[in-house]
Amino acid sequence: MTDGQPNTIPTKKALDKFIAKTAGGTFLLQIFYLASGFTTTLLLTRWIGAEGLGAYNFVTSWMLLVVILVIFGFEDYLVRETAAARGRQDSQTANRLWNFSRGFILTFSLLAVACIYCLLPWLEFEDRSLRPTFMVGPIMIPLLCMIAIYRGRFRANKQIIKSLIPENLIRPILQMTTIGLLLWSATPGHPAKALLINVVTTFVAMVFCMLAARRQDAKTMAADQANLSSTTEANFLLDYLKASKTWLLGSLPFVVIAGISTINQRTDRLMLGALQDIKSVGLYSVAVQMAMVVNFTLLGLNQAIAPLVAERYDANRSKELQKSLIQATNIATLGSLLIVAALIVLGPIVLAIFGPDFSDSYLPMIILAVGQLLNVASGPVGTILSMSRQERFVGIGMLASVVCNILLNYLLIPRYGVNGAAIATAVSVGVWNLLMVVFAKRILGIDGNIVSFLIPAKSN
Image (cartoon, rainbow, N blue to C red; front, side, top):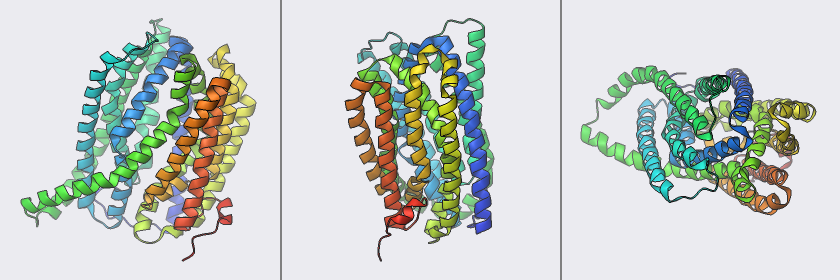
């Protein structure tokens, strides 16, 4: 499907084909992203050292947190509302929402950058490499925000593979190549230089998004103008202002969820940096990167299922996804189980490539991998709830998870270091998934996996 074309709800056969094609393509892109990410991390370790890698990841974690807050939940909101509008063949609303979200996020992100640069002179850093690295970091905020908005548009129009190309293909290739050339030429390394490379490659990825969306904009402009021809300019502006208010209020639950989710995902590294040292953050980051491969099978399923749930929920046909959902979750879980087994066996060998210091990353990697296996086995229940206009329950589950994560990290990191951070994160992932499975069954009557059949549905 492309912009401007009527959206029809697919048959069961078409649904299975779309899920298989999208999940398979996403998985391959994620595998490439993992392989290139490992290579880039290895090159960074050799170029700026473990401590430099820790500073790089520490600053990146803070910038990503700001990005999530600035996006204001519009990526997922854009996916849900655009998919639903296309299902109603309402291209005018979909295009208005796209134009509003793009302008709003660009303005908001530039204001955030200005605020950060105003605050930086007042901050004190124990590690000397952090200040110049923080000076570079904010530049990437508006770039990442715009990529996220374009990604949301592509996802809503079921162009899942296209939505992943900028960050899973273009950026990794450019980063890996540039850092490799600098290392080969014996150019002195610094975390700020590494982050500047990240900024430049992010800009290239954003340009790709803009060019890919331009063709869609040209196709939809004529249809949108035809829809507007019967509306006076005054009425259009009034309707647009009313719609803008609705969009902002509608996106609020998503920004809360996204903010809490990012805090949850970055709590371990941020608290390691605060309670231990920057080197621990570097060691732990490698463990996280390796463990996340377990989750790749679920990522593909989440990407495919989101627009389908949104359009089917508005048409009261959500339960048609049930059989395909269970089958896809079982296949994803089996694949993730094999990946965990491979990490247990091959983990020490892979970690040795990064250097002798990274042998300490093995145990936290296994702990995190088990947590991600539970995440995959639960199915895409969080996505199902969000796309079915039940995002408040996702927020409740996420809040419970982040409270658990922060508390356990505070208690375990001082005593167990990186292993304590891994335990805290794995337990919080389990709490989140248990709540999501229960909510999906009790509220929507949808089973995300085989085990959820044991949970009684809400009686009518």
